[in-house]
Length: 315
Length: 324
Image (tube, rainbow over all chains, first blue to last red; front, side, top):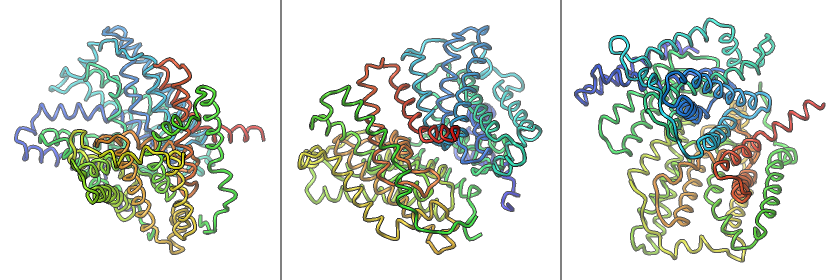
C-alpha cells in the first residue's frame, strides 16, 4: 500500500492545473476566467454523477454502476415533464426524480445482494429497463419545459461570477466527505469494500449497506440529470449516456481503488476536472473527431498507467 | 487461499454452465413457433439467424477474454475498425488478390487492437474495464479516421456466399458449428487448461508455472481477431463500411456471455453457452415484435425479459436457499 502514500488527489489536481496551463500555451485565450468557470460548470455535472459511482466502487465486490447514464436521462425527463416550466413545481418534481432514482438503485442493490447477479450485469440490464421506461413515459414525445430556476442555478453567477451549480458541487463535496469519513455508513462502506466477510463477522449488515449504496448512486445520478437539464434546457433520449463510462474513469483517475475499500470523493472531483479540461482542450484545438477520440483514449491510458496499476503477481 | 490446480470436473461444469440458457432457448423457440407458424420455413429461419451471425462471432471472442478473468469493452470499436479497414482496402473494383488482401488487413487490424488491449492489461497490469474503455476510443477513433462517413463497395461475388445456405443448412449454423469445432480442438490442448486456471485463480496459476501474462495477452488477441471476423461478416451482410457499426454490439456481447452461463469473475463457462445466449437474445426480441406489444412498450418488455433472464439463476438459487 506504499504506492498510495503519494496522494492521488494531489496528482490529479496538479494534472488538472497542468492541462489547463497547457491549454493556455497551445491555444492563447484558452486559460481565462470565463472559460475556467465554464469548465468548472461542466465538471460539476460529471462529478455529481460520479459521486454515486465513487460510493459504488468503494463498496467493492466488483462494484460498478453502468445504469447511471440512463438514470441521468430519466431524472432530466421527469423534471422536464412534471415541472413543465414552473418554478413552484420544481421541488416536487425534483423529489419525485430522486425517489424514482433511489428506487431503481435499490432494485440494483437487491439484485446484486439477494440474487447475486454481478454488479456489471445487473446495472447493464437495468440500463435497458430504464431506457424502456423512458420510452413508455415519453411515448416518443418529449413535451415539457425547463424550470427557469434550474437555468438560473446553472448560468447565473452567484458570488464572484461563480454559478450556483459549482457551489452546489462544493457543498456536495463537503457532504460526501462527512458521509464517507464521519458517519457509521461511511465506516461500514469502507469495511465491506475491504473485506465483506470480516465486515459481516463484525456485525455490518452487508446487504443493507450495498442496497443503500446503489440507491444513493442512482439518486445522485438523477440529481445530476436534473442539474444537467438546467444547462441543456432540453432533453433527448441519450442525454445521459455519455456520462456512464466517464463517471467510472473520473473515479479511477481520482485514485479510488477499483477493487474497493479505498478512495475519496475529493479524488473523484479532481478526476472529473481532469477529464473535463481534457475534453475542452481537445474541442478547443479544433481537431477532427477521430483525432480527438484517439488522444482522449491515449491520455486515459497514460493516466491509468501512472497510478491505476494493479499489483504484480510476483509481489 | 491457495487453491490447488486440478482438472475441472467436466460433468459438473457442463451441468451448471449453460443448462439455464438452453431451457430459455427452447422456451423462446416454442413461443416463436406459436406466434409465427412459418418460423421453421428455411428462408425465414436462415434470414432470422443471419442477423445474429456477427454477434455470435463477437460473443465467442468476449467469452475467451471473460474466461481468462478479463473483460473487453472495446470489441465493438474493433468490429468497426476491421469493417472499415477491409472495405477501404477492397477499393472500387477488386481483383481476387485484393479481396484476399482486404480480408487479411481486416483481421490484422483486429489482431492489433487485441494486442493493444492485451499489452495494457497483461503487461501494463491496468484494470481491464477502464483500460478497454480507454482503448475503445483509440480504436474507434482510428476507424473514424480511416472512414469518416459510411460508404464503400462490396462486390456481389463476395457477399453472395454469406447469404447462401450450403446443404440447405443456414450459414449461421455452419459458422456456429465451426466455432464449436475450433473450441473443441482448443479444449484438447494445454491452452484451455491455462485459460481456465488464469481466470479462476491467477496467483495459483502463476505459482504453478502458468505464463499468466502471455495467456491474458493471447485471450485479448483472440477476442480482437474474432471481433475482426464479426466486422468482416457485417461488411458482407451490409455491403458497406461504417465506422460506427460495432458501437452497440459491445454490451450485447457481454449480455450473451452472461446469459450463456459464463461467470464474469472468470474461469467458468464456455463458448457454447454464449452462442446459445446470442440466440436467446435474438429470439426474445422477435417474440416481442410479433406479440403485438404496443410499440412504445417493446423496449421495456424486451429489457425486462433480458434482466429477468440474467437474474434467473440467482432467483432459482434464492428460492432453493429459502426452501432448504
